[in-house]
Length: 170
Image (cartoon, rainbow, N blue to C red; front, side, top):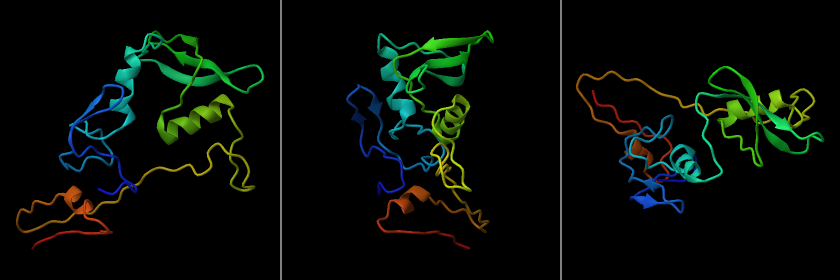
């Protein structure tokens, strides 16, 4: 499978340097929008949290909502985050390192809401935060056939240099 524009999938079982195990890809076609059911996709969800949770200086806070990143007085670095805990209380959580990993929607929102960086202004073409803001959009087609057809998009996408391939039998 080409690496260009695709998730990196494991062609065979693999254990990463942190000890997290990836399964072999079964070409089920759910790479685009979903977590891999056999953990063959090297995504942050299955390669980072388990390793981080084992670290002695990491505490996982579930059912909390991040409101903003808290900057230092000179606004040159993050000192932690402000969150709402499961009881609904707003609190500051200090941190030596803050990683924004909530995809393009959440990261841009958090940076703008936290006053990090200069917001992008399309009219003047100035600023950085929000520039090239995008989302992956995957098109689709529905076909109704007179008989059942088994078609697996992943097998078609594994063909080298194939731009579009659709199989329909009537």
